[in-house]
Image 1 (tube, rainbow, N blue to C red):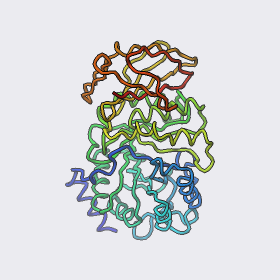
Image 2: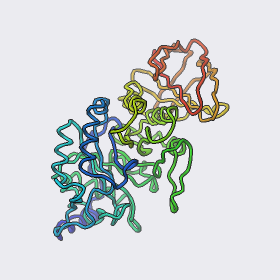
Image 3: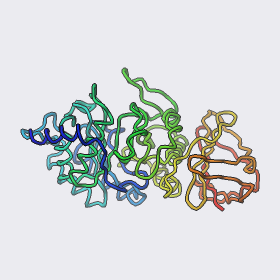
Image 4: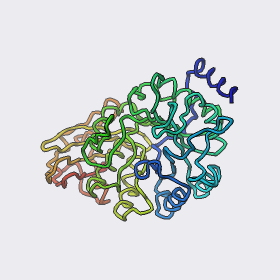
Length: 401
């Protein structure tokens, strides 16, 4: 153990250039994470049942391939050699057997830890054990690491995450690295070569537009998170994604709110990590999470993050996202508590995206328009679009010429 810690020290001080694996996340990662619904109340049976449901429900085939165990999977103490140990009561057959089970379902497996001395729930953190923990993750065969930021006083974020990134690379197994330091240290400015995704805000909460007071910090509703994320669109792209946190679809919001939440995460090219109990989800929730046409906007090969183009009257917003083959996704988001009417003249709304170098100009090209959620053609940009959007709902369109 002492030798491993010494090696870690050398890398911390002299090898601060990130060496991440290439092309692990060309599109935003999709999967499921235990935290939003179960917090630390996780176990072997839950994982197996969730893996089974990811397959039988069609979620795996829709693209959700990562099953990620969040905080609470480990024992309170490392073993005599300093290695992390799965809680034997929660995981009686050990982690390797569980990983193998998940892999047998055609899924990938992820785990959680923290850059600090302890995790957020008080379990052993990784500080000082980066290379030892990376080796153990590789031995277990994990595919994804969510790396949190609790109990990190006095630690430099860029150094800590770069060290862990290099440890994963040295361990030799391609593992998607998810930085979760809540955007406090602006990872979009330095983490492109460190990990595949980075959190941009604090934790999400299952509400439309609230701020949930947790005492010493706040969790944020879907619209609050979206507002904090929107200006960061120049920094996201293939293999380096802005992450506005996990999905709350199926966790208490209305159907319209769930649909809008999911649509806007897809517009922002966000990782789609479900956070509900998929073993018990409704058909309505499943239909939202697995809509292939909406997912295609998120998983578009260009990897360009959408952004707010315009605020219209009565809390109606227009968001735009460039897609492959000169197509566009357009979202009309109703943030108000009343139904809103849309009267939209496409020829008067020329979008000049100077970040992605894309132009939407209906005076030059006539775009065919389809409603993404209903999968119906609704005309073209030669016509003024007249429509309505229900409260907290979204009209999601795809334009193509």
